[in-house]
Each structure stands twice: as C-alpha cells, then as structure tokens.
Length: 219
Image 1: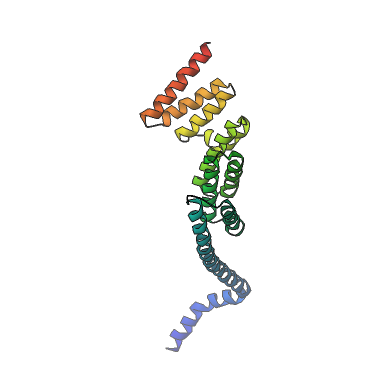
Image 2: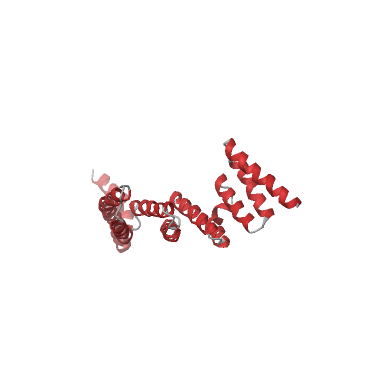
C-alpha cells in the first residue's frame, strides 16, 4: 500500500515542480484573467445602464420631433445631450438620423448636411453601424451634389461605388459623374446599376439614362 502511495506521489512530482518553478507567472496570468473577466462584466453592466438612460432621453426627443408643433430648442437640447453623453449608443445615432432627415424635409440643407456628416463620423470604422453609415453617406452625397460640390459628393460614397453595391448608389454616382461631364465613367456606373436593379421601373429609368447618354455622345 505504501508503494502505491509513493508511486502516486511520484506521478504528481513533475507537475508540482512545474508549479513551484513557474508560480509567479501562473499567479500573474490568473490575475490578468480575473481582471479581464471583471472588466467585461463591469463594462457590460455600464453599457446596459447607459442604454437605459439614453432610451429615456431618446423617448423625449422622439415624442417632440414627432409632434405637430415640435419645439426646436427642446429637440436641439435633447440631441446634444444624447451625443455628448451617449454618443456611441444606437439611440444617439438614430436621433441624429431623424434630425438630419427632418432638416432636409424643412429645406435646411446646411444643418442637415452637418448632422449627416456627424453620423458618418460616429458610425465609421470596424465597429460602426454600417447601415446608418451608408444612409448618412448617401444622403450627404445627394445634398453635396445639389450644391454642385461634386468631388465631395463622390468622396462621400466612393467606398461603395468603387465596388459592387446596390443599384441606387451606382445610379447616384452615375448622376454625379454626368454632371461633371465624365460620360464614360457615368455610363459604367449606370450599367452596374442596371445589373443590380430588380424592379422594372428602376431598370426602365436607368435604360433611359443610358440611351440619353448615348445621344449626348453622338452629338
């Protein structure tokens, strides 16, 4: 029996020696693991708390912007509060999108463009909201194009138009290029749009644009 106990102890001897030799490193690793786990737990709780608080502010913002007689000062204050305190939250982003869209409907294009550009900035990057970023870029490009700032408009959407994307962005890019008299590049974008569109109405409109472009080239 004593021999069995001795043999069992000998089995664990290499492990005990390893633990003794590397105990400082092992303790350091355990401390780091505990710290990382604690950080993620605390950060998750704080994020939930921030989202709950942001939702209350957004509710006030949404009620006001949706009312028949919205208070512009209150809308600005609540939006500013959201952006300054909870700028990375989804509530701040959708509020900014709503405000920019409202400005555009009211023909306040300068303020609308400013808000769309803010939305582009806070939704850019790997962890950004790609949907809001695309909406903001396309909307900003339309405003810039209407102001004849064609290069800025193209820069705003070049990350989409330079690769295969949806039909509307190719069409918008083609429209802007046409305004710059870059007919060959415009035609290329229209052809891509024609390939991407599925509905017949959009296809017909693009086909007409391509046909008109051909007539302009013949002239």
